[in-house]
Amino acid sequence: MAITDVTIRGAGVFGLSIAWECLTRGARVRVVDPNGVCSGASGGIVGALAPHVPENWNEKKAFQFDSLVRAEAFWAEIAEAGGKPPGFARLGRLQPIADQHALDLARSREKTARELWQGKAQWKVVRDTDVGEWAPVSQTGWLIHDTLSARMHPRQAGAALAAAIVARGGEIVGDAADQGAVIWAAGVWDLDRISAALGHMVGNGVKGQGAVLALDARNLPQIYANAVHVVPHENGTVAIGSTSERDFDAPNTTDAQLDDVIDRAREAVPALRDAEVIERWAGVRPRAKSRAPMLGIHPLNRDHFIANGGFKIGFGMAPGIARAMAELVLEGRDTIPESFRPEASL
Image (cartoon, rainbow, N blue to C red; front, side):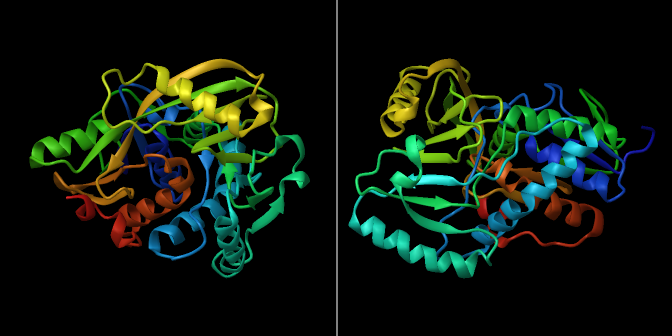
């Protein structure tokens, strides 16, 4: 590619999704990452795309809702363009209801979801007996079933995005000089760089540990119970996770904290009790100080842009973030929520 309109530094889910969105708008795009596609946190295993509760609505919840609604068409287009499946399916999520207070609250959210989710998804209270053997343990016998949550296989999604970008004429390379507009989507590395330059913390890496179990539940909803995400994937496995560790010595190794996650998952979901653990994973996810994604003008270079801080919601937010950043960079149109701007973490 002789001339580039947009250079994106970082080939995680934010960088690749923005690259795809820019390509669909006619830009010439190059993604640069010396470590390759989804080599960091975006190469994880869990892939839970789940919404905030439907109440106390704000710009962050609205942005995430729009991203989740858009996700099905977004990933279908990517699969068609590149010929690789991203592992996306909107199959909903189950959550156990612990007591009468939680049951009353869940039922009140049925009503707010009808308004806030605009009829595009439901938040329902159902009997655990209606779910069958996949039901998580519930002290009340009741579960929340939302139909907005979706699952994504992170590694497959990264490969699908890369294939679609190349098929559309984009480049993904290990090294290249900046050309055109520059967007930094470089995760923990860039958050550390910004913090060091400014002399105070604007974001940090948070370690997460997860596991893959050999159980075919591919057409069943994900579960959130016992503070653990349980996500069936289309390849006949179930991913569970994760820890959130701000203090750690080894970023890519697992330990007894993952054993605890596995134990809690088996306790919460009886169907998992005899499932074999076939993979253990650990990685460090970028979290901005504000806990929201960091989007806009780069704090260290006003001529560059930044898309960072995906933390646990990067894949769920990716369609909306890709659109917002493409609008900003290519059209000069700023639709970024105030709480997502870098200034919120500086």
